Image 1 (cartoon, rainbow, N blue to C red):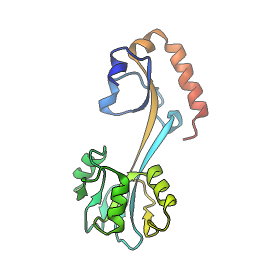
Image 2 (tube, one colour):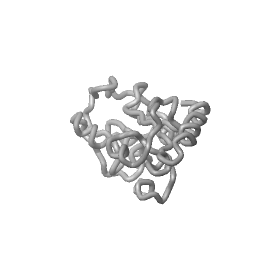
Image 3 (cartoon, one colour):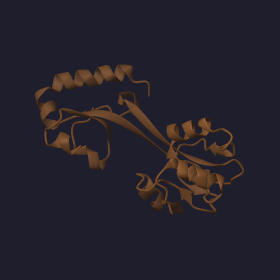
Length: 169
């Protein structure tokens, strides 16, 4: 995003609307999923016999740590919820393997990546299931530099309008 702020780029994707990215560039006025280009969903995966649960606000039934990759963006939020975390793995696959070996209680990761792993090796991961309530969801937008937007506001608005009409989120 620094290249956008410095004027090296006119636009950037993906950008999630958060306090840290707000000053990076101009976001569309409509911050709904309908205006986004991509959505990342983070889910909880656990063994089918596990009692772990997530109601959208709180976890229950946690007996061991939850695996989350080192430096994951949800770590701080999960720490605030007092979720015991294992952040030693550098990949989701490592965490899935720990889960199969019952070294951790669950895994929190991007759904599309884990779903692909689970369907790619159904025998190895047969005991793993995805919790139905997502842990988090982030909508990604195309943003414009402040300078570009100031000079080309109508064009930027048209681009966002056109993208919104194609969005399937």
